[in-house]
Image (cartoon, rainbow, N blue to C red; front, side, top):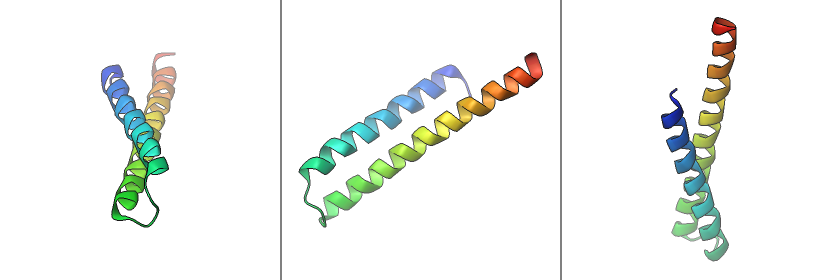
Length: 67
């Protein structure tokens, strides 16, 4: 994973998480908007997790191959 792709994906993940958290504070639980925002929060967290795992795997691979 290139550094630019990782930064962009992490930026999108942070945006999704922050926007979702702010919206969840203002929305009423049980409404369709709340459910969609909660789903968006989960997607943002999942994307962030995927980026972090990708960075860790690529760094381990570089250490093993390049020394």
